[in-house]
Image (tube, rainbow, N blue to C red; front, side, top):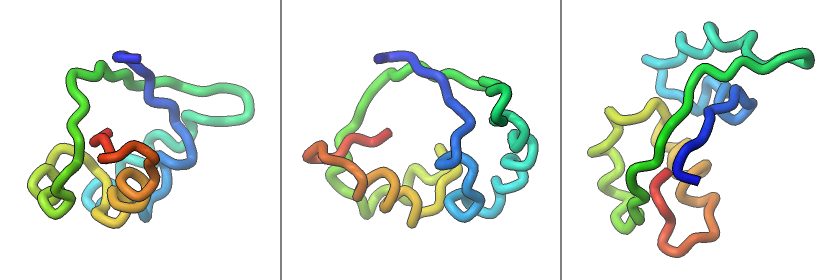
Length: 88
């Protein structure tokens, strides 16, 4: 799909996966996912998928996301069956 919603899931709310300067953002969305309802606050449109062929260059795009370097490696690069992995 070229468009998708961002669901408030456990994977996206673990503070240890988010760089410290962005952790305060998590508190505001804590109530977005309960047993009774889900609040969808964001959507995205995919404009490109780029193969990650030089993971050592990922710090160059750090300002484009909130994830820690360890999270990017374990949750994105090491958790894929695509060869080479696609940037997400």
